[in-house]
Image 1 (tube, rainbow, N blue to C red):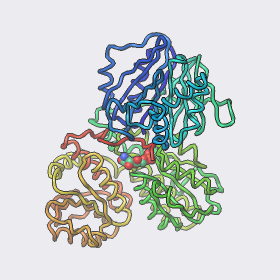
Image 2: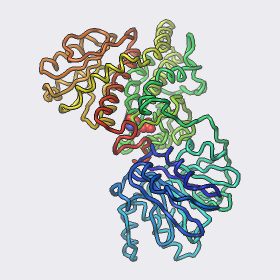
Image 3: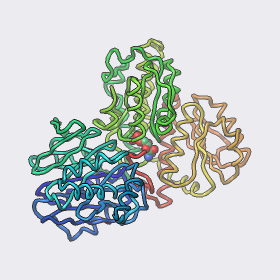
Image 4: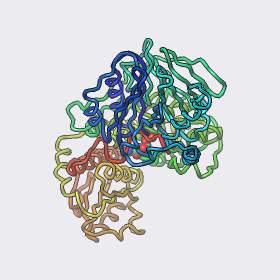
Length: 602
Ligand code: M6R
């Protein structure tokens, strides 16, 4: 994770860097820094914690005239979130910022230490700046020194380096972590993603892995293993406007309320009267495909789990789901008749991206379901279906999950339609249900205030079980993840039928059970499972359209004509419950501790 920014030009650098860092803060917020070279001298400001602290520290600083500058927002990987471990890391005359992990840093550090280099931090990043200075001391050529440094590094990185020996130059390199270059007249920007430079740069170049170079005098010199290369910039579209809270207390709250609207966007042009249209997929897309494998992480993994039920039940195609970080190292058997799907809100998740690259190397056809156009995962995939959720700022994902699940439902129907495994009537009834989903996602004041009141009863106890069956099992996992991310309370999702195989041993009055009890899917079965828990005195919050007399608390849902409508309505209930509990506990809802929005380290 971590976010990096660079700017070279005449404008006030502090404002530019802080503005970009604010938009990159979703990538981590353990410390924030800016560094400049003005009048050939290095300067830096570091602050622990969120950007407000850096703003305070730099109150009286203003950059002057032409200069170069870099900045960083950190999600700690090596070493605690302290000022010494905050970037930029300093050599004798150079600074470096970095996103990623240098895997061979221990070995590099030992060799540098045996040459007498003193390390100030516990980070892997600091090795970069010392190697650069060691190489410069040998060659006397800054760019050669930088290229030699890059060659030695192993792991994932996007890095920017500035040095007093070349005070008008920013050196850059990308391998495995995102980095782009923005252009406006003779000004050059660097950033970990494009949204923060919209309104500043008019054109952009997304660096590929293995590319590196330097920028000086408004020109960018780009290299890869074959030497210097030309590159094409593309226009930076201004329609990715930055998100505002619009009167809501938190981005997460706003994003929960937005779900009804964005769901309509997700369906637009895809869910038609009697058919499903996916223009993103060409006519031969499904040729030769006999099974699907999906890789994802976190919430995206939960939407994948939900879809496995739909692909097998509706499309009649085998579907396996894997957590990307597990898939990467299990030496999976991959055959070219498998469609490889990755799901990612950000499109930058390192494990998911690497899983995709592995599948491509094995010759599989790839499809990504993603919320960010031009992200690494979208660019790497053969085809992509965008979820159209709009920018999601809350670290706890909500509308991204809803729209991913919708895209997967659409895709399952598309495959069924193309393969003719669905009758016209069934397709029509699925489409009718789909078109009702925006209604099931509307947050009413009555519902929100009921959850606000209820939340005070769920602040203590020794843990939560979210339970459900079938597609409501992944929803239970997702409900539990949401709650633990922002409340820091222990929560687990379980298939309801599995409780008796062990977890029910935890049942007592201090155990909270959130029971997802859809009318349209195995109601009687889950009812028995919840009764077994009630008999052991657990506190039960039941969510159902059917009254359930053993519930200690009850949220009555309205849309019960189709399992997916019940799914989406219950999803909103679990999201609001997590939100209200977190607010009562006084936590930072949008930027919960230890997390980051985009996880670009493995
Ligand atoms: O950007 P991605 O969808 O690939 O991210 C995957 C997970 O890191 C993400 O879903 C994470 O679990 C969220 N914090 C969940 O709220």
